[in-house]
Image (cartoon, rainbow, N blue to C red; front, side, top):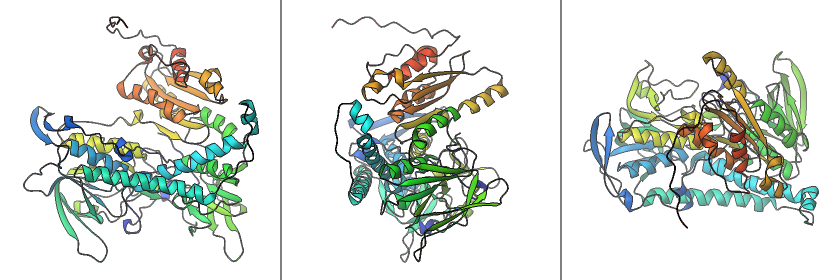
Length: 575
């Protein structure tokens, strides 16, 4: 889908030894088959201390399975009873957001479930990704607002010079991650999920070993196994990361210092979000992008508007069409040195000297050491090959029975909430109900100020598809400047864009740039997921005055030839 390419060739991507990193089920990339720059989250409500299981979960549940039926016992306080020949019904390798979502859904289905984690529960999303990054972005948003004299004056407010405590900001991010991690762990323990500590390795069909270095391994068996080991930051060759002046997103989230001048390699989602944080805290930023334009993964029209608002007015400059072929950390009183090479000619182009460099060039699958060779599975650039139902495919192109892979490790869509959706889908299949995830209905967002969100296809992708399949594409747009709530907030800068088929009203894509765009996108994503057509959603009622009316106006402005679906009219209710 969206290719948020950074300054690298993705043919260079290799796997990362799992013994050196934690299991991660979230990434900062967004693509169907390659590591990119995204950092988003899909936590279930249990992460915040609320349980989704009630008394309705107890009792016996009837499930249809391809013409056959079976009964599954589910209990809110138990973890099911496995088949006699196995230790568990389901084992999940990796306790990130994807693994966590799958585990809770499995318990709801009455499956005896274990989850294996070699580091800490929560994966990248909770510990080194979307959770702590959103804490930093919350700070940058407030700083940006308080620093804008024009914005404050327009609201009739007078504020003295805004400042910040770096350690206090860092503590806010770390404390949030700790809280969510604890809630995730407690939610699984409360439901009876067995948390097995150690590095998990598949040793044969339906068999996994796990253990810590220096201790004996344990062997467990399960009817079904889910791989949910996620990804880690990808660092191209020639870049020396010291964790202090040349850093990845893992290090940046600790906010150990705020450099005066930082180069960010890659202008995708990770790079954009960190540019928002660093500039709000006083840094100057230089983007280094391999492609000819910034933000290549976005719809081009949205990207141009975002550049005008998020890049041009801020202390940000950029180099496009170049690779950062060599980066040397600061040492012996010398600054960080970055050697730039022309992406097309491969000739040396420039040298930069900066205080720090952030490598935001995407994610690499975290699959080395999984023992895939024991079941004749060969990864593709590190990604585990799967079909549309997340079933693992072996070297001969055949499905490996009872083995699934979700999230970043399969590379279909490197988002935390996509991993969770895939995990729930797999559990549905294991429980006897066929299910396939519609990845075109999964939204994504970039939490800059203002935010960017999207679902479905970009306009170029939609037009390419239309040309191949022979249908027409239309585009509708609406501005935040026409929205009462946005104007009340003095946040009228923004655009919503709808890409659709005028012949039948199918929504092909929606892209939003503006206040709370990340929250607004879900009306569109749910419409795509449910197959709702524009001619029907036009009749939905939105509260006034709210930002949701941006979407209301967007759908109403579309010109669809097909009539609305007939639906029963509700009888009026006296009040």
